[in-house]
Length: 239
Image (cartoon, rainbow, N blue to C red):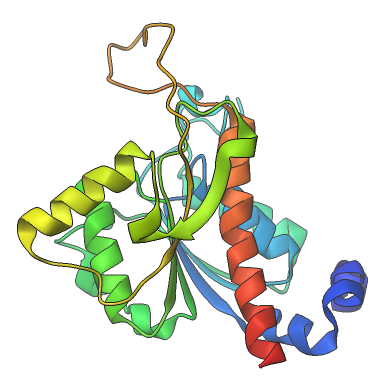
């Protein structure tokens, strides 16, 4: 089964890297617009140990950009929908679906030292900052997504070390928060970001202060996060 599933991946990366990917343990916080596509890519790249963390259920407003969202999955927990999809992709995968917020109240429940990689795809500024601080203290390698909304030009999506990210309002807000509180990440970490800043051209019918998004932008953010994991695994094998 495994040989047939990942033959093309192993052809490119080699047997040692393939086996390392299968043993890699990743926890993903937020499996919506960015995180869902990241998880999909990791599963299709051969990663067989994943924990998915997200409290939300699928909403109709998610359908334009989120992997888990269809008219049939509206109302279902995102982590459960995604878990079933991953098992259909690879029956050997071990998926822990955690329908939970990551916050000051729940952070202690997540033992980040147990993972090789932490993927941050959280929207909430406060909770995102907390995860970055905790993950940077752990043994895991952290990769973080900055804001993927209000983007239309995919050529401007890039990767940089957090303190070198430019033109991203979310990264700027995080840096201000760290400086104001006097607490800083213990280690450097890479982020996926874009310096493009568009404006909403319409009004949200629900009255929420939401920003417009496109699926090809959120998907590329997610795929680039997955790529960072795969590249890091390969680099460790080569070393």
